[in-house]
Image (cartoon, rainbow, N blue to C red; front, side):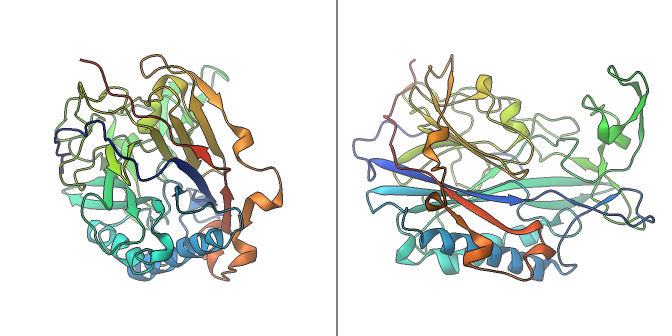
Amino acid sequence: MSRDVSPGCAVEEFMAYNSVQFLGFSINTMPAGDADPTNPFQLKYLGNTNSKIDVSKRCQVMMDAVRAAAKSVTIAGSNTLKIFMAPEFFFRGDRGAYPIEEVSTILPRLRQWTHSPAYKDWLFVFGSALGYLTDGQAKEIFNVALIQRGGTEADDKDNARLVFKEYISRVDFIRPKAYTAKVCPNCNTMVYANEFTNWDVNRPDHRLGLANTPDQRMSVLRPTQGSRDHLSKSTNAPGRGKENSASGLGGGGHFTMAGIRFGLEVCLDHYNGRLKASPPAAGEVYPQIHLIPSAGVNITQASVACANQGIIFNVDGGGHIQLAQNAGTYDVPHVSPWAWLFPPNVGGWVDVKLVQPRKDGADYFVGGGGMVYISYVANLPPTVPAPP
C-alpha cells in the first residue's frame, strides 16, 4: 500500500484555537522479560491470544487514560486544543502484530467514546497499531499511527488520519539471537543481531521477527510498500509536498486538523529525517506542531521539521515524554527544551492507575495502566508558508 498525495494546505485566515495543551500518556509498550528457560528469545509480547479481545482491552486502557486526564483540574478551556498522545506499539497483541484487518477496527471502537461533545476540543494520537499482511514467506508490516479528532462522529480526512511508519527498526520485534558475523567495535567479540546497532538490513535472517514462543515460525519482515526502507517492494521518492495525503488514509505525515498544521512521524522515521526529506511545497504551511510517537527515540534536532516557534511533542513507549520548541528555522532547527511546561508536582499529572484502576492492565502492558502528564497551556505557533 503506497501513500497517496495531494496538494498541501495553504495559509488559513482563521484559526479555531489560539493555544494548545499537551497530554502525554506514559505507558510501557515494550515486550516483557521472560524467565522461561524454554523461551530462547528471553522476551515475550503481552496480550490476549484472541486479537479482537486484545484490541478491545487496549481500547479500554486507552480510554481510561483519556477519562482520567479529562477529570484533571489542569485541563484548559474551549479555546485551547488538547492534544493527547500515546506511544508507538500501543496496539500490537501477543504475536507482535495483528492480522491487518484487525487494525481497521480500532478507530471505530474508539470513536464510540470520543464522539462525545466532552472531547470536541481534543485531538487524539492513539499511538500506533501494528498489522501484517502475509506475502509468501514474508510478512509486510504496517505500523500505523492513529489520529482522531474528538467531538464528532465523522471519520473523514478532516477528523481521522493514518500515518504509516516507513522504517522497521532492529528493536521493533522480538527476533532470534542470530550471529551478525561482525565484531563489536567496543568489546571486540562476536555479537548477536538484536544487540548490534548496525545490523545488516539486507540480510533476510536479520529481518526475522514476530515470534513470541519457540514453536512459532519466524517470518522475514518487509516494510510497508512505498517505504524507502530495505526490502520494500516499491519506493515513493521523497520531495516537496510528498507527505500530504489526499484521503487521510494514504499514510502521509503532513495533515491539517482543527485548523492547525501538523507533521507526524513514528520513531525511526523521525531519527532518519523522513519529514525533513519532504518539506512542504511552495506556499504550503510548515507544520506548526511536530508529533513523534515512539518507542526508543528522542527528539532529534537535525530531524525537527516545523517552523520557527513550532512545538515538538514526543511520547515514548520506553517512558520518556519530551516537549520542546524550535528556536531556529525549518532549514536550520534548534531545539529549545520546554521541561517547565510539565508541572513538577502532582497537580500537573494524573496517575491512571489511581484514578481508573484496571486489574487486567498488567496483562497488556509492562507496569500496568500508565500515567498521563499534562502540560501548561502554550500559545499556538504562527503559520509560516514555505518559500518558492
